[in-house]
Image 1 (cartoon, rainbow, N blue to C red):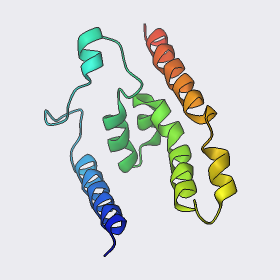
Image 2: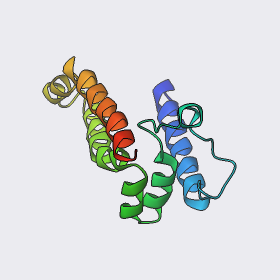
Image 3: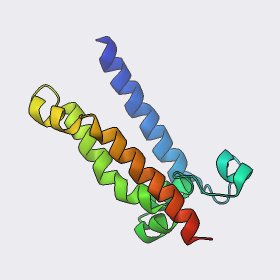
Image 4: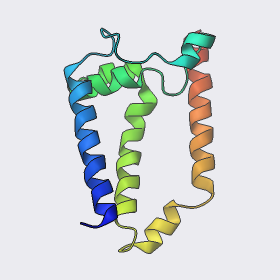
Length: 125
């Protein structure tokens, strides 16, 4: 078995384990799930705050609940799926890959997440 194939298999197994854990256990009611250190230290929500509860809600079909916990996570899932597709099709569609992986993409993502972090704290203030 090739080296990178083992990495893909390990990644899939870890993903399945995470899906099981987040489906079986509610992060809101469990002490096993870590608290956000940024929220604990500052009282402000980081861009990822609520993601564990949002994933739990999504795995139980509660899109509205997931959106309430972390709207950015729910909105970004189609983008993440698209980026995984682009990565898988890297050799078959090199033009698409180079279009998506340009220097502006990480800058745009950083700006959006910064705006989300600031906006959600102003909104909940």
